Amino acid sequence: MHPVECRELSKRYRERSALAGVTMHVPEGSITAVVGENGAGKTTLLRLVVGLMRPTSGTVSLWGMDPRVKPEVRERLGYVPERPALDRRFTGDDLARLSLRVRRRFSLAAYARAMDELDVDGSRKVDELSKGMQTRLALALALAQEPDLMVLDEPTEGLDPLVRRRVLAELIGLAAGFGATVLFTAHVLGEVERVADRVIVLVGGRCRLEAPLHELRASEHMVRLRFDAAPSPATLRALAGVRSVHVDGDVAHVHYSGPPELLLAMSGAREVLGAEAMDLESVYLSFVEGRA
Amino acid sequence: MIRREFVNARWRLGVGLLVALVTGGGFAPLFFVVRSLVPGAHGLSPAAAAALSSKPAYLLSWFVKTMPQLITVYALILVLGSVVGEATGGSITWLLMLPRPRWWIILHKQLAASLEVGLVALAALAALWTGGSVAFGRLPPGMIGASLLGIADALAIEAVIGFVGIWFLTPIAVVVAVAVLFAFSIIAQIAPALDVLHVASARSFLAGTIPWSDLAVMLAAGALAVTCSVLVFQRKELW
Image 1: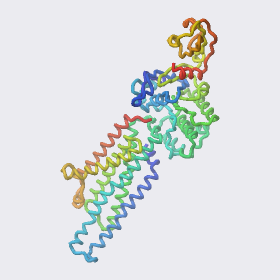
Image 2: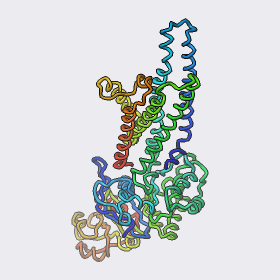
Image 3: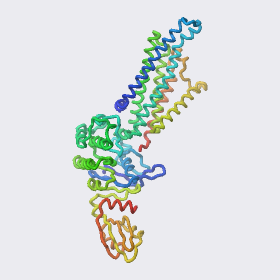
């Protein structure tokens, strides 16, 4: 049973559709990144996953349980929203003591270790901390729950680049050390490639890609094909594995998932001018710009 | 959970208790002034003096009617901080991520708010009792009934304002809560005339009876508001 499983998940805000039929899963022990432009539905997806929102249709399960029906499953969950959910009148240490009363798995030793790692002063009120410090405090509190699943919405937002690296290193350490599964959203794709081992690409509320990063690197190619005459983009887009197409005269630039030779055979092109393995950023841009 | 609410509210509660004690205790000198007029030293006719001697009970009745207004202001400040403030500030997410059902969370929040308002109401009444005892040497009739009704009023007001706060989760809740209480107040004025509801009057305090039906109505209204709060919060979407 996967830590996270979503089936045909949709969410509408009045007339606007934020998510449309997202089916995805997060395997045990993985570090999964959800990427997408602003308004793609990343935050909505995470809020549905942790049970803060009710889906319009579809299902969410954490280890097979709906978090809205079985809230006790949140005992295994650490969640850090984009805007840290901390009561501003408390100090970090106050919040730790409160958490200790209401969460069985919360550990003051783990809290102290996380605060030390993240270099946060627990004696200061949340109100007195900068946004970056608040994010770090929220992360420390989440880590101190020793969760099986960490859900982080833009965890490095508002952090300076140096701290950003440390936070990401902390994520990796967490995943490796505790065997926890991590699901997070991010804007900076370079960070995602360094940290994650799986990626989910959301475009316009739809899940366009869900794959391990190593598979993505091996399979996603930007192929340049030469045709005898200008090809029809629509015909090329209809081919299996083709994600986006850009035609320039008799040359087509095709974002293709699979071996370029197969595309050559399927498309009826004269020759392959070149094929480059794509990194995450290129894949992402291809989806967003091409609206594949 | 309740401890968290009280730690959060320590300043508000401190100021509330102080205001309650001063307001409740402030009636003692007023009683003294009234009492000093009664012996007729100021040329009052015997009839006027006799009428004035019944003033303590009227003052008590007036205080019991004034207390809801004080409590309303306090409850509005409480809900603004404890519910609306948490929702707009985002810290409500921390509560919602607890491994507890939503009804448990909101019930504890309402319970903490009721305790807080109850404490303030008790402080005001305790000060009034003390002041009254000092002024008259004995407690006016109906004091127990009036006090019980005062506390029931306070709890019902808090529960209704809390429900409105949970429904809206934005500062507009304060405006709506005032409008709702205003509407209730009008109904309470009209209802006795229509023989629908007998809200406690100075007469019942003078008679020294405990207004059980009024108490029941207030507590039922409070319980209904809390139930509605739980039901609304169960389905509430939080961004």
